[in-house]
Length: 268
Image (cartoon, rainbow, N blue to C red; front, side, top):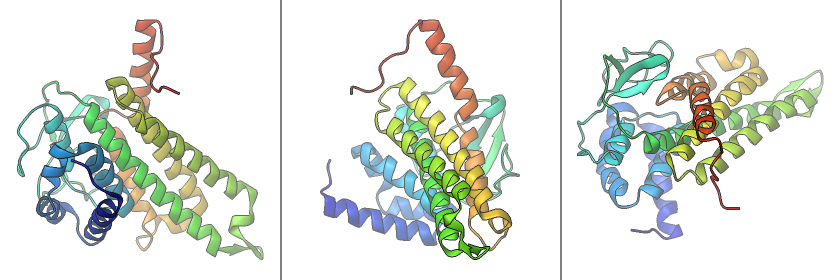
C-alpha cells in the first residue's frame, strides 16, 4: 500500500492535531480509530516513522511500541496486548495499555508513562522496536531544539539578542548536527545491527539535545510553564528502553570485535 504526497500530508496533519490534544489511553483509542493497526500491517515503512516522530514532536505518549514489537515478532496485535520489554540495567518493564499509573524503572523520571516493572521476558526481535524508538527520540530532540531556538531569538541579554552569542550558537549547532546524523543513520537501518546503531545514535543525539537546550534555556527550562522539562524526562526514559545509547554502543563494539570487521551499513 502506498500514499501520494497529498494523502500523506493530510494524514500527518490529522495525527499531529490528534496528538496535540490527546495522550495516553485516549490517544491509544484515537489511533485505533484512525486505522493505526491497519497502517502498521500494510505500510509500516510509512506508519512507524510518522507516528513515533510525531509522538516526540508533540510530547504525547501511547502504547504503540507494544504493537510494533509484537508485529515484528509475528505475534497477534490487539488493542489490549502488551509484551515485556528490556530496560537499561537488566530490568524488564511492561508498557501498560490505557491510563495505568507509572510504577516501573524510570517512572520517577517521567510519571506520565504507564510503565510497570516485571520480573523478566522472553527473547524477542528488537530491531523494529529500536527503530521506532529512534524516531521518537529524534522527534523529541528536534522539538527541544526548536524550543531553544525560539528562546534565543526572542531573549535579549546585555543589550544583545541571545542568539548572537557564539557559545549559544555552537551548542545549538552541535545539537542539530547530532540529530541530523542520527536521522541519516536511521534512514539506512535495514538490519539488526543497523537498528541497534540507529537507536544508539538517536539516544545520544537526544541526550545531547537535553544537555545543550537546558543550558541555553537555563532555569526557564525547569519551570512547569515551559515544555522543555517534559521532553527531557521523556528522553531519559526512552533512551533506556530496548538498550541505552551507552549499552548499545558497547554491544555494537563487541559484535564488530567478534567479527573482526565492520559490515557496510549504507551503499554510498
